Length: 314
Image (cartoon, rainbow, N blue to C red):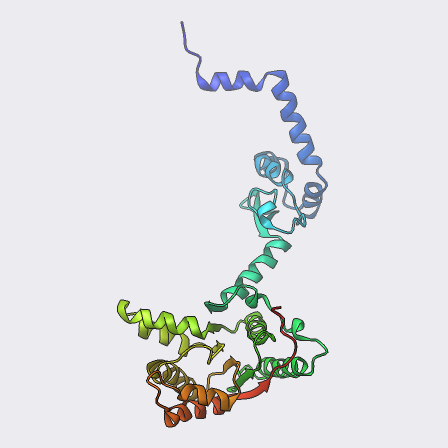
């Protein structure tokens, strides 16, 4: 008994009518595809029969995929082999090759990802980081004022290419949307490729206290204080120790004031209220001088804006 060689077996299978018919249909459908025909017409001066025959696998790969963005709304649902990419025909070294380019949905998702990567968040709610400047526009006077000042800050950067050195100190009662202003500003800056760090102060200070043991304290302080744009949310909500006030907040503010880096803050306190809060020590002492030193920096680095309105968390 002789064993049939693989090559001979393959030739025999190819000659089977059903296989041959399927292949001819595939070949015909591929060559008659309107986009393939257009490609042949556009490159008729270089394309020949031999090139087409040797490129049949690539041409078939091309016609069996969606050649334009299918508008699926999510590249995870994309039907193509490379999700989020559409095939394009090119001639490379006397062969027709398929190259893949990002579809419209992929471009949108990449831009969103790029924007999100420009915002570093420390303990901030996810919904805050999705806020937009447009969402600030209401008929409430304080929100309109904040919107105008935020737009002016952004426009100065657009015009000059330099970030204004002064940020905002936004104060007002709980739930009026102060944190969302920070998120909206961070997103707008991110769209301009300006990196921001948004920090929820009470949790951040607790994290720094725990960082003393694992020796990452200085690294985390440096990460925050050197941010191109820093946003400190809910300052004054925490019970601040003298160590947190002088060694953490004081260090961060001193560096940013010296480097003229914009800093934004939100608080339930106005300037005077925050100064009184920072003066309180856990031992019961009133440290007005040290508190005043911190507030001197805050006042020089920010413009105060009062935010009023209904509690949007109810």
